[in-house]
Length: 172
Length: 182
Image 1 (cartoon, rainbow over the protein chains, first blue to last red):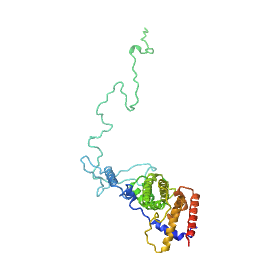
Image 2 (cartoon, each protein chain N blue to C red):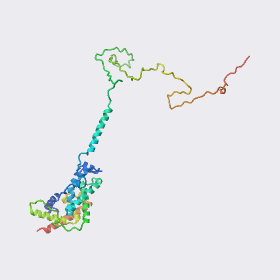
Image 3 (cartoon, each protein chain N blue to C red):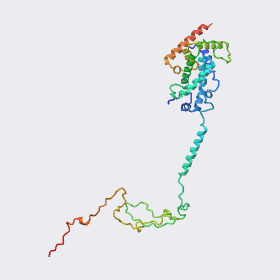
Image 4 (cartoon, helix red, strand yellow):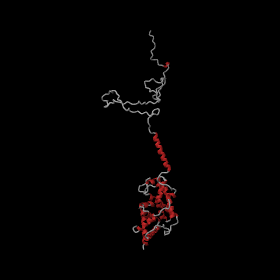
């Protein structure tokens, strides 16, 4: 049906589509100077601060070198020319024996100490107690702190059952 | 929020504009302002009224942008807003006089063929003289080059209604063209 009108329609369409809004509608409606690309300055600043904070946090929680009490770093290393040390003969049953029993060890340049400086000499269970334990009535071991043992009082002498005591029978 | 990929606009821009991003909203307004203006100009035959309609369309577009679900193209959906604005403006205005040369849009472009220019102007006059609904349908379908489905969506009517309206308008234009034919 539009065949007869096609050339006129084409020209009318060109004219129609050549119409332009004079000016910037976004600016007329108060949205001027805005583009869809690029975040505002405050957002960029917030992103930079977040990145810096996360980097600082990661650095803070990073594990460091182990250090001694005076801050010096003790290094345990294998001697340059290790000497063979007799390890002794380990007797095991044939079933437990490993195919390659360790017979050769290495000598360390220094013996690492794993005790903290404020510990003092290490105590063993065979050492005498530092403070003699006093045993008193009602003192219960505190292995189970939540458990209270009932104290059983011994009855007075006159209430004791003496039925089983044999009287001093004078058989004479 | 469902936005289909068949829109000619960047989906990210539409989504950001729906979330209230001012820059994205400005981009959409700049892309659509000419579409709204020329349609309003065709409907109202007055540059100042078309400008007013375009600005009103922009305001309503921003208000209702969050409701856009992507059932149609953004351009079609926004042209529906423009159409409603133009209808309201037409109702408020004094009854339109039939378009003549003084109320038609000025065509400044040079034309090589005077006969073609005359025929085009005659067609423009005929389109301007059509009833409102037919003029809307013809403009959307043949000047804005929307599909029939999009024309129906912009006009807010069923597809069959849009088809019938376009057919009536074409019949009327053809009748006028035959009458004008020497």
